[in-house]
Length: 181
Image (cartoon, rainbow, N blue to C red; front, side, top):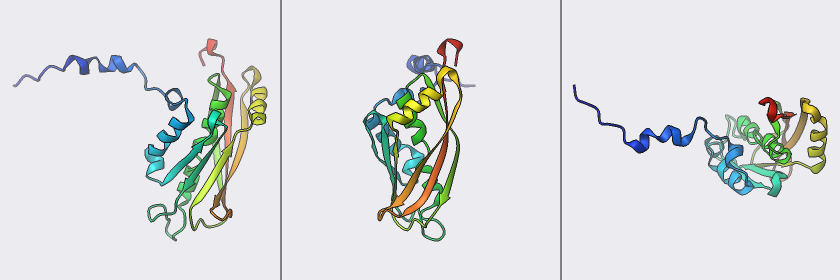
């Protein structure tokens, strides 16, 4: 039986060089411009035709659009509902998480969409994380309390017609790193 070649030392040491775990997006991307670029090449967005137009400085807001193309159309020729829902997926969690800082856990807990009118063309949605919202969440999460907060945004077409309304419930909690969470 032939002997297999030895693994080169660089490859053999690779797991140790990488570390025991893969870093999160939050750890890798602390710059809104780099996050926008990363999300725009992220396969779930790229292949759905979703484009992040802007993530505001300080993670204060974002604008996302979805073009109507032959690949984004549903059975009846309008925007595919799954793509409309997906274009809103990570933004409340990302924006609020960055605004609150690393001492807070922020997760999507629930989500719902109300389809109001057919998306017969390109659509867009915006997110705005105000200072008042951030302070309200900080106060509510004081002492490690669990906070559940609904946030809403509209998806509109180029004429400003409401196509869908999306609501997402965020779970927010201040963490106590000394207790291991």
